Length: 300
Image 1: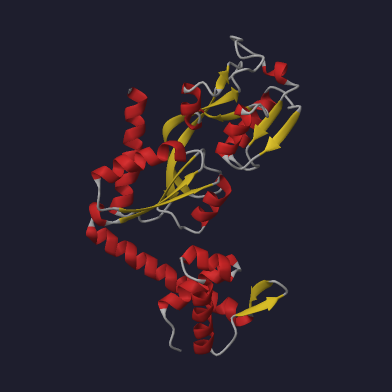
Image 2: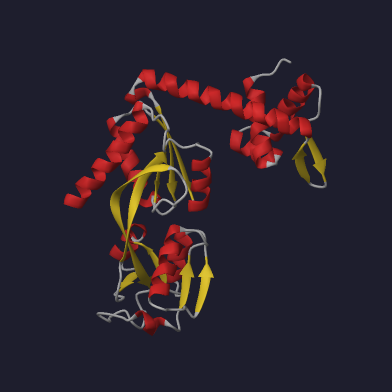
């Protein structure tokens, strides 16, 4: 069989997405180019690798076997690339970072400072929700992640580097805007705009509500921090968010912080990676940089 690495990469992407269109988008190729690569691979193998049933595509038995080999080969190539990056040193390596969407508000500033110190580093930043970030960790895709409290059961080396206070935000004209302290029970007629189930902020909010035996009158679920902030500003409801996500809105007085008894909810940000992963010098340098920056900000 005459098979190219590119064909295997395209095949793995189509199998992972179960879609030629999404694979093409992720690989920055046209759909005809992806189809041609799969056709050539099937020609070399001598068997069909996909079958279409209705509007969906599925791996054939040959496709399932080929996927196992493709993932092994791609994994070996990634390991070889990392070893070569190790030999190149910190300033010419690659850095693959996944960050929870809430962390992105200050992660970009961290990356900018790190990039100025190491201008030769090639950085890939993936901003995603907590569920997808954990899936990426399971697949060993990122070098380093920035996230909230790591879950139990996932073998991570994770170090806290910064406090992450959660506060309750409201529009400036809210009826309790000028109250010095507010009991959570006084908000039992309020609607809350909340993150999706599984979000670290959502988990912390639900624990706080359970501790206070509080049940919101109604909730509206959103998966985007910006949408939540805009909804609260428009008067759609209240929300519990990381203070790092609303610094600009609070300064501009487009949102206010309600002084709720028992808040802020104190959480921490973590920098982590899979335990046993061989971090490149670049990834090691970034991990230490994040920890040092967190310590510096805590002192200042």
